[in-house]
Amino acid sequence: MSDDGATEADSTAEPGPDADVGQGLLDVDMGPSSALAHLYRGEVHRMKLWRERLDQTTNWAVILMAAILTYAFSNQSNPHYVILIGNAAIALFLVVEARRYRAYDVWRSRVRTLQENVWATGLDEGTPMDGEWRHELAEDYRNPALKITAEEAIAHRLRRVYLPMFAILNGAWVVRVTAFGDIPWPESAAVGQIPGLVVTVGVVLLFTGGFLIACRPRDWQARGELRSEDIRDGQPRERRED
Image (tube, rainbow, N blue to C red; front, side):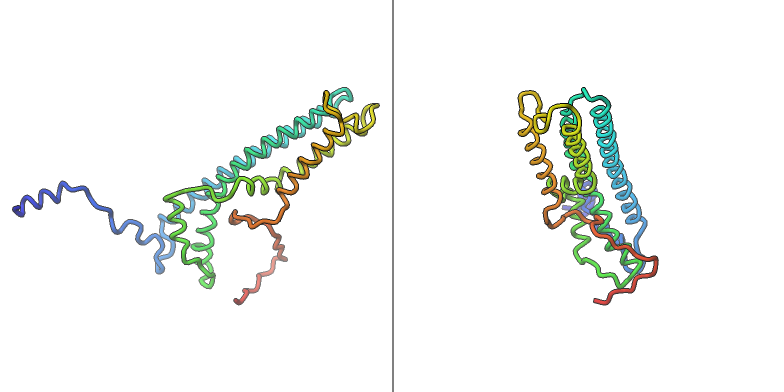
C-alpha cells in the first residue's frame, strides 16, 4: 500500500480516546482547577435542590398533622380514628421522604468526598487524605448508585422528624379516647367492629416498631451527617497529634 493510501486511511479512521482528558484536574502545584471547582459547585447545587425537596415533604407532613389535630379536637362528636388515619398519612410522607433522602445522600456523599480530600487538604496540608478517593469518586460517576438502604433512610428521618410527630399524634389520640366522651377506655378506642383493646394494642405495637427502627444500634452508611454534638466556646481548637 502506498504512503498516500495509508495517510488517507489514517485520516478517515475513528479518533481514539484523548490521553490527556482528565489530566490537571488537581495538580499538586496549582491546586483545584476551574473544572474541579465547577464540578464541586454543581454537586452542591444538586444537593441543595434535594435538601429542599426533603424540607417540602416535612412541611406538608407538619401541616397535615396540625389540620388533623385541629379537626379531632374541634368538636367532641368528631371521631377519634381520624388521628389514626393521620398516622397512616404521615407514614406515607415518611416513606416518600426516605426515598428522597436516599437520592439526596448520593449528592451529599460526593460533596463530602470533595470537601474531605480537596478543600480540607488545601486548607490544612497536614490533613490525612484517603488515597482511593479519586478512584471511588470516578467509579461513582461511571456507575451511580444509592449508597444507603431504605431502612437506614427511614431510621434517619424518624430520628430527625417523624418519630416526634408520631409521638404527638399518638399522645393526642390517647387524650382523645380517654379524656373525652362518656364511654370508658378501652371501649372508647373502638373503631367500628374492631374492639378498643385491639386498636390500642395495634397503635402501641406500631409506635414501638417505629421507635426500634429509629433507635436500634447500627453502622450508619450515610456520610457527612451530624450525629454528635461538638459544641465549642468559640476558641480555636488545638490540633490533635496522631
